[in-house]
Length: 154
Image 1 (cartoon, rainbow, N blue to C red):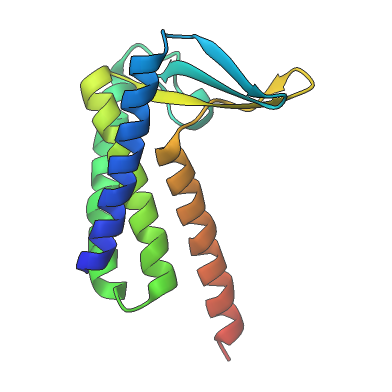
Image 2 (spheres, helix red, strand yellow):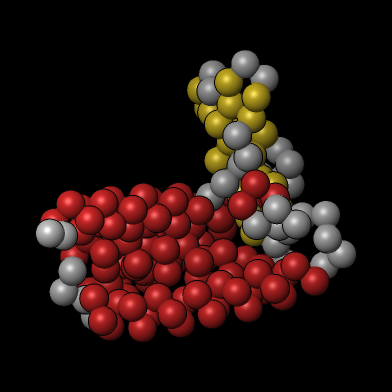
């Protein structure tokens, strides 16, 4: 169990360090082209993924904090049950670390700090951060685990 909580903590530390760097090195909405398809930009997201509910009147901040904390407690319980299953536990730890990283932002900034901006031919994928990447990777690993478990079933 400690190993998985340490992985989640590592995600939180890397996520918060990257966000501290971007907020210190950039002005809000400042953009730096790194490659023809990738920019660094400091933006706030008051909504969820893809700015879902970003236009709400402010209640969404507390809703997303409560939701993430509830899911985090559930993930810790799942980690206890599945600590021996390396793939599932890795996926859960990545999701946990990402959720906690974004909760820290919502509590301290009122919104999530995003800064990774991928684009092509004028289309910009919504900006995201390391916590979002950890959550996405965790979900992908969880799906892979489910597919593998489905094949193993008689």
